[in-house]
Image (cartoon, rainbow, N blue to C red):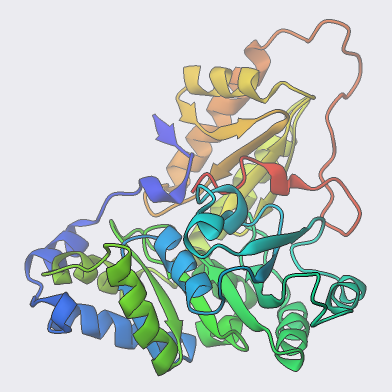
Length: 365
C-alpha cells in the first residue's frame, strides 16, 4: 500500500533511531536536557529568533503562540481554513478565550479588509484585536513573502502581534530558495513542525524573542506539556532538522510528476503545490474515487469533490510511478456517473478568483 494521506505517516529512519538511542538526556522541565536545548537553539537560529521551545505537537505550538500574544476577550484575525480554526478542537476559544475574526479567499487578508477591520479601534462596543495569524505553506500553497511583510507591517503599525503557523515552513523556504529565517521574518512568534515533511516521530517548536518564549515555557507547563528526559525524542527532531530539509525539494518534484499524471486522467484535475497533489473530482464523487484508489493500493484523503495526496520522506520515485499507474487503473475501472457527459471535472485555478483547492480535507495533518 502506498500511503499518500499525509507526511505525518513517515517512520524514523535507521540513522534517526540511532541518534535517538544515543541521545544525551536530562530533565527538560528543569532546563537540563542538553539535546532539547541544542534543538531549541538550532531551531531559533534557523528562524532568526532569539529563542525557541520544543513542544509535543503543532497544536500546542500554535496555542502557545496565541496564548502569549492575546488576552481573554480579544480578537485574533485568521483565515477560515487555518489549522487554528478548523483542526484544533476550538482550543483558541477554550484555552485563550479569544474571538476569531475570519476572512476567506486568498490565504492572506487584502489591504482593504484590514483597513476596514481596524476602523473604530478602541470602540467600547467591540473586542480589541490582538493578533494577526498567517500560515505558510497553506495546504501546500506558498504565501508570497511580500504579502507576509505587508500583513506583519500592518499588524505592528496598529499595535497587533503577528503569528506564523509554519508547520511546513521548511517546504516554503525550499520552494522559495531562501533561508527559513526569510519566511519567519517579521513575525513575533512562529511555529514549526518536525514530524511532517522532515519526518521526525514527535514534536514541533514555537519561536520568538526570549521573554515571549519564557512565558510560552510556563504556558507549556500549564497545559501539562512539561517533559522530563525528552532528549530521546528531541534527537529525532534534531537529526531531521539537520539532514532532511534540503531533500524536501525531492518531495516537491515528485508531487509535480504525480499531479501531471493524475491531471491527464479523465474526470480529474490536479495541481501540485510544494509536496501536495490537490485533486478535483466530479461533484460529490471524492469518496468514490478514494475507495477505488485504495482498492488499487493507494491511500489518500478527501471528501466532497476534493482529494489530497502528500509526498513524504518514505515516498520514492518508484512509488510515484506505481501510484500513477494504480490511479489510472482505478479511474478506468470506475463506471461513468449516470447522466454525466463530457468533462464534468472542476478545473483548479492557481490565481486569485478561481476555484480554490484549499478545501481539500484541509489540514487533516
